[in-house]
Amino acid sequence: MAKVGLWIDYRKTIIVSVMEKWEESKKVVSVPEQYAQHSHDSTIQVGCNPLHAPVNHAFKEIFEDQINTYYDEVIANICDANSILIFGSNTAKYELKHRLEANKLGDRIVGIETVDSMTERQISAKVLQHTVYA
Image 1: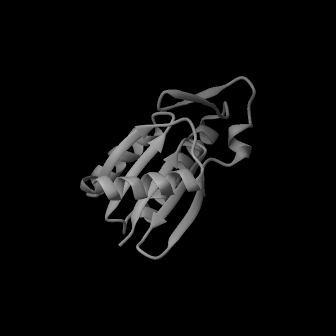
Image 2 (image 1 turned 135 degrees about the vertical axis):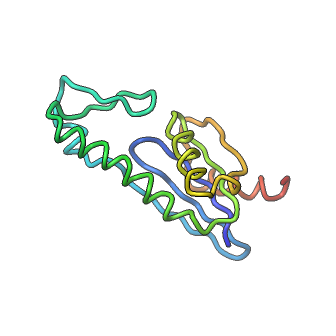
């Protein structure tokens, strides 16, 4: 089982899995731009961050379904990890934490940190650093 670090916001997640002899990076992308750019005048509240969303209620539901699918895809990519470090600049990291807890994976979370942005290399270094000091 891998140790995982991830940086998440509402548009993308960068996942770095670290094992003893190898490392793997993945990127999960959120809401398609067609939904995010459909309307100039309307917004949808996702956590504490407003994102552009369609005026039409049906499109709004599709947008919200995409956010839910996004979190599900992130969880599917990290569900085998024995430890999970979560980084992010907004409330998406806490929403992911709550979803992990709802999926009985909350005990694998070893830290949550507010960080504006991170490269795959920085995420990997944090995972390795946490392994050394944990």
